[in-house]
Amino acid sequence: MQVIVQHDKNTAVISISGDVDLYSSPEMRKAITQLSKKKVPLIVVNLKDVDYMDSSGVATLVEGLQLTGKYKGCFRIACLKPTVWEVFELARLDRVFEIYETEEKALKVSPL
Amino acid sequence: MDSAKREDYIIRVEDLVVAFDSRVVLNGVSLNVRRGETMVILGGSGCGKSTLLRHIIGLRRPESGKIIIKGRDITQLDNEELSKLLRKVGVVFQSSALFNSISVGDNVALPLREHTKLEESTIQIMTKIKLDMVGLAGYESFMPSELSGGMKKRAAFARAISMDPEILFCDEPSAGQDPIIAAGLDQLILKLKKALKMTIVVVTHEMASMYTIADRVIMLRGGKVIFRGTQKEFKASDHPRVKQFIDRRPEEYSEEEIGRYARALTSNSF
Image 1 (cartoon, rainbow over the protein chains, first blue to last red):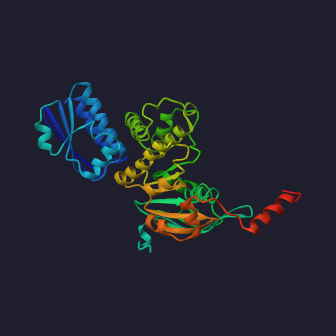
Image 2: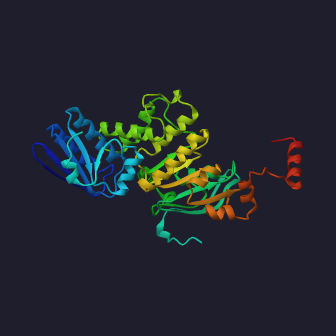
């Protein structure tokens, strides 16, 4: 799994590629926690290149939601593939997250 | 006809023979499970279903035969190798087998704490997600003794899937559950298969459950496989025992069996 982070003062995009599982999800967590420590107002996780995510992956994203919520930041998911969407549905998290079709939309929409 | 190649099978059982003292419980059982399918093992009480499952997960060694999981014959592995192989295997035991001295949440979290390097905060969210999946959201701090039998079974289910196993074995998951919860567990099995690509083996005698979840079915009787095939083939089978099972007809004893029973009753010893 590969994690690429691009960010400025107000927004950050975490692009993940590869499988997110019990062994790789700590890498994604590291990126999320570092950005939330900096209190970046908007964090978007782009999952365009993720074909498989297990429940440690979705739990890590829930942590992102918790961490950003503490400073009233915004945590969004973009570009979910159907296979990963099914895992979100399985965990009933498809309605918990703000999920966008594209990274651009996730960055454009004003926080709710 | 089974058209899959040998390498397509994640589980292969070949000519398994199991005996308790002189009583042969499984007599030459063979079966193959394809990666990503749900296989249901059907049969009446005492036919050897649970015994077969206990051998497939390596809890007992058979008298003879091979049990090949992910290409490795587990009957030939030492305990350490077996334990490593079984880390990606989840099991829901008929008896639940929860640890009574720790909370429900700790039971579910235990495999994650033992076998992964995940942060405690991640483990706690995963535990909540798994308990929610089985309808036990909010029960993390309960002790197993505070749960009903059906709830214990669901907590055991949550523990079995805590590591998102590649293979999930369930021994009578619906037993002791009301019809709504049982249907919910069937739906969960379908979703786990679809979303996490799990291979699932379910031992049951619940026909409604079999019709909901099974890709393929085998039926055991007297320690032998008497049927193997799809649900459709099962329904259409003209095997008398399969038909009796489907029609829920009680056992009819032959004159010979009644004679044997009468002799046993009138003999002086056990």
